[in-house]
Image (cartoon, rainbow, N blue to C red):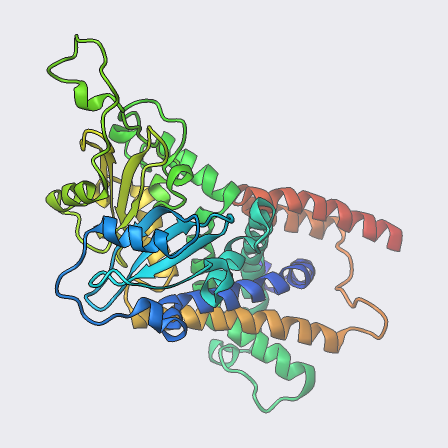
Length: 453
């Protein structure tokens, strides 16, 4: 394979790896640390907030309206928007409450006694901070774009890094997979960096690819393409009910990936008068069935605890419940008209298209949920590897750079530039945000080369 041993290609790839690494390394470190924290979100929350999350075992539970009322009473001006039911007999219910001062609180209530056990603002907890920072650097859509761009360029780093690591000449794969722990100085750091990448690159690549569906640009394009091809959100449910003003995620704040952009059904505040009196004039608005009746309907349709139940938002809102188990095969989303009690939407994992199923499976593996502790351990290994690469790379550069200079590999010659452009163009097509930045990087590289000449 001439392209493996070609020194011109090697130097060109090294130059791209160098610049991409300097720019992306800080973000890879952030993503790996926050990701490692969130892998153990339940364990960390149980350790730090045991008094809120863990209760005495309860054989019977109070109606949901009692739990919601207790949560609202504990927050001045509080208005509940959602309740996450208990996952075990010794676990509390979690009620999402909008406080009178605008704060969004999560209030924990004992399902057996109805006692409010305490509350917190999610973003101000360790897990909440890691969650938000991991997804958007807490900068909204701008931060989401930065994270997506860093993730896409991390793919470039992994591909170019594996090329640079690949054994050449008399060096064997066994040698290439073994760190030179007795070496000192830059050779030690170079060996440690290369071996760490060799052992963890594929796992890190898996983390990136399973995380990108949640990104703004890449995820939106993937979802749109999957829906057009009929392998995303189930076609049979797309036009169910009235034309909505919002999607499920917009209305509830959270939804499985496959249903984020799915149309949100509406309740009909005269629906209770329809049916036998279809030709009669509309009477007074129907009365809401209440959260307890909604819970009974969910139970009758086979939706068991734990589930996340968003309360109706306004006159046309619906009760929207979904189960989100560690294994996505058990996912189910059910929406109920708040007046008639009719089920206006019912979507399960079996209804998803092939792409949506693959994404949901990937997400649960990404989050360390699917295989329990073993899954967490493997993903932690990948996070530690990514963190190690983002630290050893800059150390290696710092040790080799001439004093007062950047120490970058020399600029590309036109032939080499064309080779690298062809290689990275394919990645740009696969990752549009990276492709756009790649064009800017190529232009800047040529400008630097001309100024140097």
